[in-house]
Length: 411
Image (tube, rainbow, N blue to C red):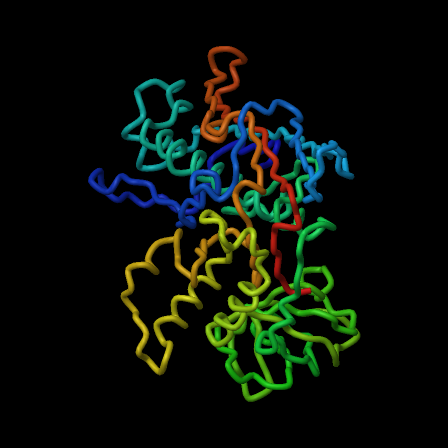
């Protein structure tokens, strides 16, 4: 969410006449709506203008020997609270349609030179229904999960000054959250012996064995001893995709790697089709029993992990699995033993969170704020022949009772 986005004019890359029957606009595909609130994966609380408290109450009870005389037990009623402060942010877009007169759409403009600035209803409606509204919804979803630094839908960014870490970083920082490392699963770890500095598609990671690693797998690099970087940031903790399994020890990766001092130690950690059942079983064994037995506790995974889980089930028992099992269709409600997996398109790689919606809270002012868009034409007031789009929202996300939340990630 850029607080100020100014497009002073339309940029035209090409505008070949296509005929009126093909006068439609297209935009790049977006991931399906995630809607963690609409899917019931968190507790949504509206009407938070600034700050709301989440109250907790605890009271331990004691079984005592029977006695005619009343003797109060030890221990007091414990009250606690955690403040959830929402962050306000806005979108400001200014658009000048004047260049449309130089395109074949000029035939749909109304006569009169001042009308050149008004654009066409088709383009205006498309901007609203296919650009502004869906992008705002998806950018919000990214920010809820990955924080402001993770917002990148169609090149979008969040430049707000207030802290907004997102739920995954909040769990990582939470001292009371039950956290485990992915390295606890032997099949999810390989030892690094070398990383070559090279351009994207040429850089390689050399490990002890590439057995069971396939093209497309996402590997997270940890514990390296060089000064290598990806995108100007230390390589430690970054995730790359495997473009080619060169041989039994060498993987070619999709990102450029720079740095003067080479790496000859460290590890990669990953979840793929070969080990996803091992990883999910490890996670399942660690879920607090109080949470496992609740019907609405969910195992949240990235869409790649969900894909690997489906493939592993289909190939289970030497091919006697099921490629068409209806229970594995869709984004929600994917069965795993007596629990349920949820596929999250906006999620950190190789990361699994297991929580109950009663422990994770998404606070907003109004849930529909992200589609409450104001558009005004300035020509009738300031004589600036532009349209301005403005949107204002508030949100934040946090948890309670970290001891009931399981968070597993590369670390």
